[in-house]
Image 1: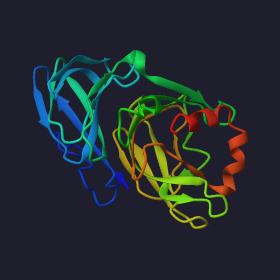
Image 2: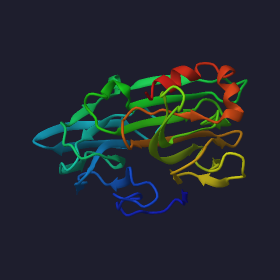
Image 3: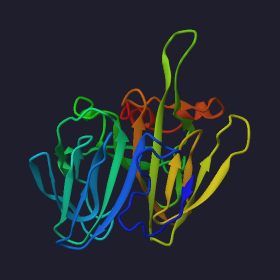
Image 4: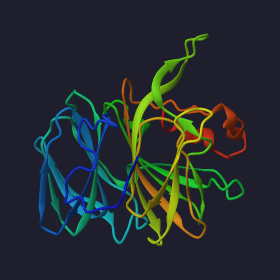
Length: 285
């Protein structure tokens, strides 16, 4: 589903127990320097990520000062973040004017908060200009935090160069299932949410959603600040030639945090033609 760009007035774009993607939560805050925002999400762990600007975060007796160092946009520096446990109250104070993302996933246990600084970000780059799949992923809450986070995965994805495809070869992750012959886990249920940005910001792209294996799916025209909810099916996307694309990515697992993607059999052969793609897959496990 596509949610068109709009002023959400600091209210959740994807709230707790959303009927379409109940495993994830998403809010965007726009705060002026000195303003504060309080929130609490019972049954959902969250991660505060400034898209631009700097904030201080307080939760469970801890204070994390000067989170976020980016200036004009999400291309202007490395991400930083704070993990907020489920049910924990959080207070965000804007040190500068800021646009801040709050990503969440359903999880019942209250863990401990922590900060992720720029030096902690886990990057991976894969694809190539020749295959029109060149992109960079910055894992904010990736595999290195499996022992500190319940179900939430948070990353930032950038196309490298102007134009090209992402999320290809086509894959899905809408059910927990095992290979009936071997018992091997071949797919996990993870709801997903994207928020897109383009450079220049007049750019746009296309989000495909093929919910049935051999039938035509849907296509959404995505623009700067579009939000897309991935509830079911294969979901590659692309950006127009001449523009760069970014998307903030939230994944919430139903039964585990590690993501197991199921690649569409008709395109699975492409896994062997795109440089570095298996390294990308491993970073989500």
